[in-house]
Image (cartoon, rainbow, N blue to C red; front, side, top):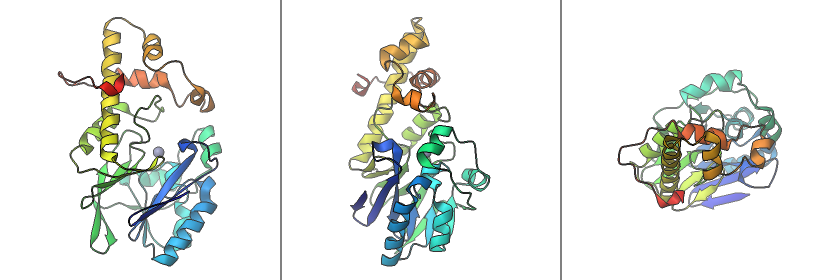
Length: 279
Ligand SMILES: [Zn+2]
């Protein structure tokens, strides 16, 4: 599925067209292609990239993090377009040498060919005097960055947003870091968010704030229940319910239990408000 929002165009690709988590977006803005979709979506991404490149040359590929649904076609696109790939410095070794990938991810997304990328600078020149600011946003992945267009208040958010109310946490995700990143992003003007899976989110700044409030409130409630002697199991059942289908499909990688265990580790401010989003 193709999306167009002003000067940005994007394509969603992947193996299954069922829900947001089996397909992912890459976006074209100025002379840059931001993320590259999963290996399983290569044919769709190639058609999109060839058409975009014919319309206006793509001069650089920018990766937000090393995950295969974002970096999966970087090597092929580098060959196709003949342009450099940039990635966060912390991603470079994993992109070049590979990294352990759970089986379900290989099945859903495909296997990622290695790619040699250059380290991302602090700002990216996308042509016509326009620049994107690179903002580190660890949590979902330790190397993840978001790209901010300060003149429009746009954010290419990679996997920072995804949904307002996550019920699962993956084992390679760091909830306290995610909350710190969401808090840090509040300092920027944020209007439209270009999410790696949810697509174009208008009122995206509000959506990110809503996710932050939900996670803080969930953590506060989990910690209050723990202080009253409740078990992690009981807290999970009360706040999130039993593990769902996603837990079994991903052999336990998407876990409600893990989200609650992580919520118990979040450092909350003394006067941390409890927001209605948690109700
Ligand atoms: Zn990711």
